[in-house]
Length: 586
Image (tube, rainbow, N blue to C red):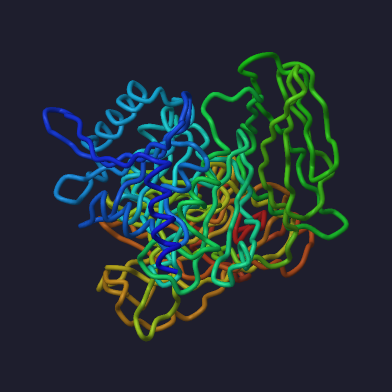
């Protein structure tokens, strides 16, 4: 066995050149190790892989990437690509600024001069803090790097709207803070236009401890992948079945910045959009959905763009604009696909996912399950900043909080606030257009059940719930609630479960509506929404009801027909109370 290992080591020495080198960047001498296969040739790929905190290039190359059977040198030689292991300053990386971005760019330029690499096939990855650096580089180097890989390195950024669709592989052990990986990938999955439902392969590569999750292909055919390693900690996987060096190369080699195949993106609607329709079963009807795509070809022309709902062809476009209309869709999850074909017969595809629901009861808070994110369907405003879902990576302001007390009323809650204290300047709304969900309600009687408390208001602050029209924001019904539980500004605090409240209202005409929750009209008032469940009790045309002073309706729930709140009427006329159109008779 020892002789065979020695022979393997000697063989590697023969087939590759491994050396240390340095380069001056911004007046500082920086060092790196470089692996160069013999008989490399020109226009070959480059992989740059960055070590973790308190490590260096030698450790990364000779410890983390080496076992008795395989090494990164062998992978480089087989595939004929260069691999560079850079050294960070003081064994660390600048994961937020440009110091090490400039270092990576300088390495690329030197490899291009020295070895005539293919600038269209440059790949960047890193372990731990090096993975954080990799995420930092995505928005800044998306036009230079063809694909990115992070091993046990959490994301420190979210996508820029100017960043192209990004091929991304993340490798992580389940014993290594695994719970934070999926939320960090979600913004990139959305940015790439990938399906939010992953394709999952267990026993990946016949390795019982490995599961591969794949989202996509999305726009430009890119994928986001998560290789989950059961019970692995904070280290590089070096098993023969799942050797990290091979996994990195097998992922990266599919991508190049200089493609000959066409590019296609679905620009509208956004992936993950939901259309929710409350209506009698026989009357359920979803709106026509216009699908718009862009397509181009780097070395020719686009001959056609085909649109599919699943496997069903919707439309074929042979010229711009590339559009199709989905009509008569039924309640289900729909995968919409655009396929572009160029004059050489090469194709590329893009997919998005839409959800059409026709419930009788809807848990509006079901997506409160990711800390520091704003769930899809929701929009918040705190008198300073407006946020819409899905968006993530927040460390302050309106967002979902995760509660960890040994006794707690719920695990997650949506926090929002009112900074300036003016009326209705702090709110969370479900169903606005920028939140990505349409809530359509047919005439009928509804109940909204909720559990609400305060976050940092020892003396409590009242909360108002409204049902509003989506267009124009006119109020249909409202209810005021005074919480009696305050969590105390610390997510690990214990707190009791708030009593479930019920808000009943009527809808008198079919339309799109918004569920709105407002915090009190005082500076830094706040609210935690822990549960919202919307249920239809009956579908009936409530019409116009008459009212006289001897009947009982809430005195504080009167609105005029423009949705403006008024005192209890004293004059005859049409008003709205609890969702009903009322002809008031003094």
